[in-house]
Length: 262
Image 1 (cartoon, one colour):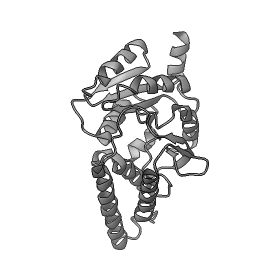
Image 2 (cartoon, helix red, strand yellow):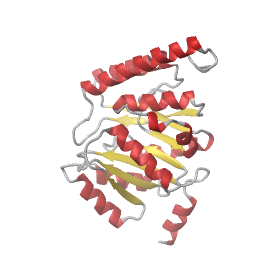
Image 3 (tube, helix red, strand yellow):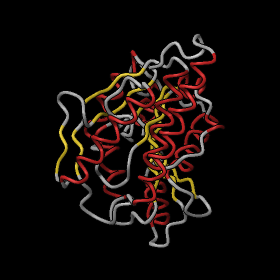
């Protein structure tokens, strides 16, 4: 217990106390696996499972994990409200408890916890780190061509429409330092899914947050069902287009207001 206490006090070297937020909805087949891998890959971090009242018992499994490990916590939410809302709740939980950095990570295993130390190391010199599927050195495993093309096209469109200088604006494996979360107007965020990640990328860029990308190995989930749907894609397309038009109008009215665009 002494070793665990020391790690919790020190946190990740050069970064401080880190909380990994893992939103869940019907991830009973995955939650114990992913939490175990996180704890093995980065023993100094804490984990928060944010469960949206999963009917398959995910929340109860997470409670068992928390009962056996003081570095695992559970946030029980009243119902399915979407990925973005779960992350915002996790961010608030972390900020209330004084964490120095917060990590976004999917529960399905597509975000390899073994990549987490590299992302945390990169956060020593940046405010926001994106685990990128589309930068040099990254790998995407077991995705059908349709998903590859959709992700590539979506990220290209986001970059062109919004001027955000990253290759994977839709990527959901991220590290935010507390200063980045303070700089972003989180109260204004309303989007979900792909759109949520793009919106935070846009807001971070507009706020002058230092962003870097680190290549990751991304793999299709092995257990459970994907939450991707045509509605999520449509929301992302609509919101990116709306934001892009809004930014262009603002730049036309006040050229100094969006010096970083495009």
